[in-house]
Length: 71
Image 1 (tube, one colour):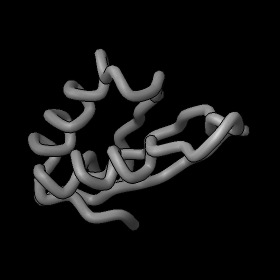
Image 2 (cartoon, one colour):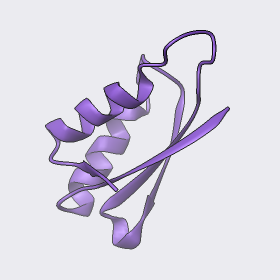
Image 3 (tube, one colour):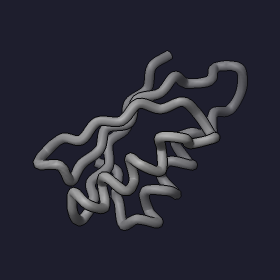
């Protein structure tokens, strides 16, 4: 199942840093896209239906370390 979550950051520079960290992210294979002037990031990934999927929790924690908030 495809899942999408979005985050807002202070600046496009911080949003790009977040995207860069996700390029080789070991938790899940995610696709990212900047939007809303470049300071927001959409993250798409396949939800693991075989058990509890920690992807969104890990994304939230990573975004929070960069001042990002889910929108």
